[in-house]
Amino acid sequence: MTALDIAIIAASFAATFAIGGAIARRQRDAAEFFTGSRSISWPLACLSLIATETSAITFIAVPAMVFFHRNATFLQMAFGYIILGRALVAWLLVPQIRGGSVTSVYEYIHTRIGPLAGALTACVFLVTRCLADGVRLYVTALPLSLVTGLSIPWSIAIMLAATAVYSLLGGIRGIVWIDAIQLVIYLAGGAIAIAIIAGRIPDGFAAGMDRLWAEGIFRVFDFGLHLHGYTFWAGIIGGSAFSLASHGTDHLMAQRYLMVRTDADARKVLVGSGVFVLFQFALFLFLGACLYALWPNAKLADNNAVFAKFIAEDLPSGVRGLILSAVFAAAMSTLSGTINALAASSLQDVAVALFGLSRERARSVALARLLSLAWALALGACAFLSPTDKSVVDRVLEIAAITYGGILGIFLLSRFARLSSAPVLIGFFLGVGFSACLAFVELPLAGKVFWPWYVPSGAFVTIAGAFAAAPCFPRRGTAARPPA
Image 1: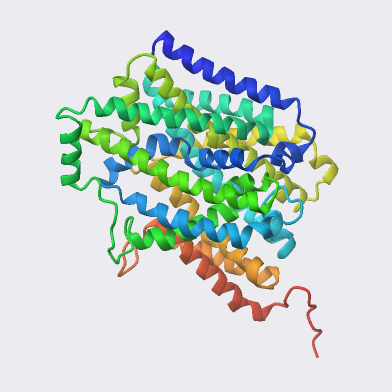
Image 2: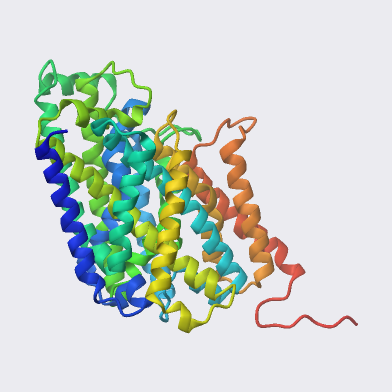
């Protein structure tokens, strides 16, 4: 890495810290730190949501999916994920979740079902999100390690330290502003990378694209009636359920529409970001296809590192620094939001709701920053659990999908039913247990079930289990009758 590359990266980090430091002086309390006092404009929140849900996984690992799957069928997930799932969240859940002055999305479950259910779903979110975003941190460390020669542990530590600093400084308001800037940086980086790769394809860009078409690399649709891999039905059914869970029940995503002024603004955030994410997935899958045209016979110990290898070895000085800045921007946009969301949920849904921490102490910005630091360290620990034998996109989504079905089931029950806490919790454990079985056990006839089916299956089992258990427990708002 040349002095010019280092200077570009340093300038990017300096700008990030300057924004965080400027906003840090305006933090009055934890509500401002976690929700921006619900005064953030919807276009800014929309850009932040796009940056948060795509991250370095999009920049580094989505191109690598071409090398894992030899096709573009992953794009089918976006159809249900964007068209159906987000629309359901926007019109079914947004008014209920935003009702009142909640800091965390799980406060809604607390008020509808009870504190134990709210704390349980929050704890599941905390563990799942920490594990999944530990994988994202690992992906970010790959190009830094390849370019600098540093070990993966040191690369993880550097990225985590940089992200934690500005996360602790500016709170959510600083994060969303930096998200918007970083989104522009990494989209520009992706476009520049495609232009450079296209000019280096040995048989020329047009011939290379014809070769990829003949090999089926651009194949998007699979209408097969099976439960393995990315199919059209997995995209419509599984993608819709996953989006309903991720944007309706995952606080990292919900935080982006909790911070805007009105329900109408929240809907604009959800729908607008969805359209843009579809474009992003297509862009970075195309980048992966171009890489495959350049290196059709690449043999790597970890296919997830294919774009990182190109950045480290094939980019000219200056451009390498710009692309690395884009990678780090993409990573920090999600990791900073994760740290803030984990701290918000652990404070409001666990410390306050379950352990009785006073509301006065919970308003402390110092406590919010201390929790943020603790979760940053936890993310670093989880980064070492990342896989090298499969796509990290699949791994991240699989981790989330195991628990999303149970949490989605609880949200739907809290929205449309009036059950007491006990049957809802019984249904939840049944739903998560069923999803875990799908993830780790091969079924006799269907074989290994792919992750998009975990969420709808888990949600169905959760709801069915709760209603089956309900006759054994009194409904909410009624007292158990004394024995005759």
